Image (tube, rainbow, N blue to C red; front, side, top):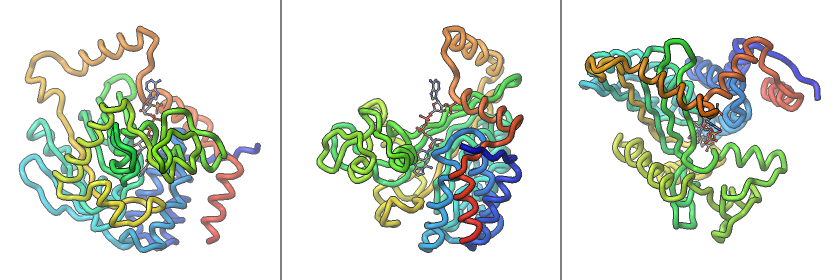
Length: 336
Ligand code: NDP
Ligand code: PYC
């Protein structure tokens, strides 16, 4: 298969232009271009250019406020609140970050609440925006009901991603970012498109029986990771990043949008921590963290995001590799 190489900047601009042509206001379109190009650059295919089609469908269906500019709707102590006013989450996050940083520095810990956003993206770009500012960070959001709770057999919880980051002085940050389902729904869709069976243990069909058929899984329910443990963490995300911030839970988001084929609309919660401030002089937290990371790697284990950072380094050196299908897809979106 022939590969085409492109740069992050060129791909981000290309994708942003596709969204501007589809009617999205420039601030949202460019933010989407950056986050989708970052997914492609870091070899996170489930949240790379494959997502363009779903976002375009969401715009065409009128399920995202294409002209909305985010707005800071509250700043109160350690809490910053930004409304996306029905637009995609990414521009709202970018608006909230400097305020979140200032409040985390002032209080040691601070929260960014994003309300009324359409959310399809991976969380690690947001986490890295905070680790770059020497803050530790935790982000989470619901999605739409597609995961059965442990012991149940029907979709109720979302794939509810949770991501954490810790800044490192001499190395890329420690970052993990995962769905609380066994895999992201995007992975199931990629298996369906490729005609590949799912690994065992990812999903059940509409009758509640285990399945490796992606179509049956999409019609049935995905399973939480770690059985009751993932189910409880996913429920916590519904509570903290849905109920607590006055926004939609995954079942409510599905009811509002009406289909899992479009990007869901709900809120997001991002917490930022100032490690030096919280350590209160009891040792250097960044130096102590390095001891732990060294011990993990000393056993031959890898740190989360190392695969991603390797892919990023390769893409920065050689360009982002796009296959023929990807190039054709981008050309089609440019024409449509
Ligand atoms: P993965 O299972 O692919 O990866 C989860 C994390 O674990 C990554 O940080 C990964 O690092 C790390 N990891 C994987 N294997 C190892 C290993 N052997 N040792 C150490 N670390 C490892 O993620 P998911 O499929 O669960 O989620 C993919 C993306 O989907 C996420 O970015 C998430 O935010 C997004 N998502 C978004 C949703 C939304 O509503 N917006 C909903 C659900 C998911 P590495 O990348 O380096 O492999
Ligand atoms: O991959 O599970 C997923 C997902 C849902 C919403 C955005 N991504």
